[in-house]
Image (cartoon, rainbow, N blue to C red):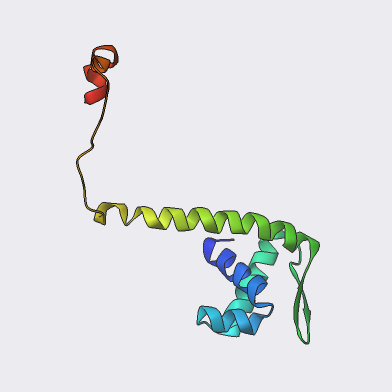
Length: 110
C-alpha cells in the first residue's frame, strides 16, 4: 500500500467506477485496476464488488474510505508546506502592555 494507491482508491469511490476514476486521474483503466488489486492484496480483503454498471463498496471499503480521506487531507496539508518558503516574510509585530517584557524575559525575544 502506498499513497498513490490511496488516491486511486478515493478516486474510484468518488467516480463509482474504475473507468471513471481512470478518466479523472488521466491514467489507464488497467493501472487503476492494478492499484486496487494491490491495495486489496495488502489489506487482505476485497474493497469493491465489481458489477457490470460499476462498483459497490464493501463494508470494509466504507471504513477504509474514512481513514483514507483523513490521510488525503493531511497529505494536502503537507504538500502546502512546500510553498511556505515562497510566501513573503513580514516582521512580527508584538503589542504588549507596559512592563510585560520584564516578566517574560529576554529568551522569549530570541
